[in-house]
Amino acid sequence: MKILVIGGTGTVGSQVVADLLARNADVRVLTRSEQKAHEVPEGAQAAVGDLAKPETLPAAFQDIDALFLLVPIGPQEAELGLQGVRAAQDSEVQKIVYMSVGMPPGSEHIPHFASKIPIEQAIMNSGLEWTILRPTNFYQNDLWVKDVITEQGVYPYPIGKRGINRVDVRDIADAAVTSLLESGHHGRIYELQGPENLSGPRVAEVYSQYLGRDVRYIGDDLDAWAEQAKSMLPDWMIGDYKIMFTFFQEHGFSVPDNPDAPLRDALKHEPRRFEDFAVELVEESAAVEN
Image (cartoon, rainbow, N blue to C red; front, side):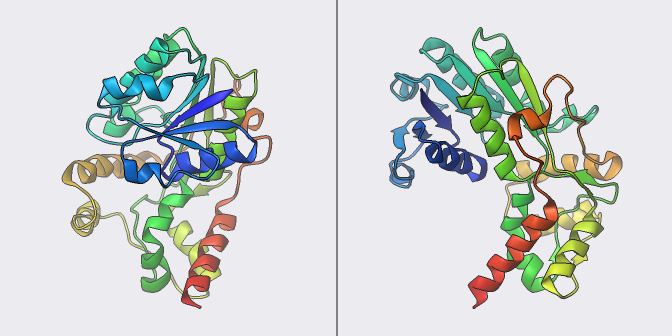
């Protein structure tokens, strides 16, 4: 089986590629740039192409049996995802595994959640074998603000006090690889989250425990967060994330296990704990300092 990974150089996709290679899978990674093509791990094949340029896709899809589809968040996310589905239908692809997002009731208005709905629908109607993964907020998002946590003693994401069930990217990759390589996952929607409900203050408390010094939660002021984020994020993303964080603060964020697609069927193990991830982040920071 030859597998094409779209989104294979990002946080989740690179883990999927690594795990596929560890299982001796035949992997091709779609990348938009020649430079990134040289960064594809040894053992994987790179294909230069762009979902925004459909004419570049047939060569990338040639001889592909299964597709892992991950579309970056952006204003054109829905259309790019639909291009990926069309390219799969036009080729010899038999199976699609798509990384969507957990969508508890009422969250569909969040822009980068809503953009995934038409992609899901197109996949379900594609006539191909399919599996959809719906993860919640990633533990690994904290790596982007690791220095703020470890050096400034602040947890800067305004996720609120009601609590969200986050998930380890490695669990997403495990579910993706299982669904790609094994049979029995057609038509399943896996809700991916960790075992713990984590409020902003609780996340800060966990980091305080393992850092051995106080880490405080930034608080729920979204305007203050947006002002700080201006130097790092484009305006459209700040607006999108404000809507998301508002939902987290008002409703929390968790998704019940799907009885028709139990998470353990995809993971083959218990979901990873946030505390274990926090220990890794702290140890990695200490190693860099030394």
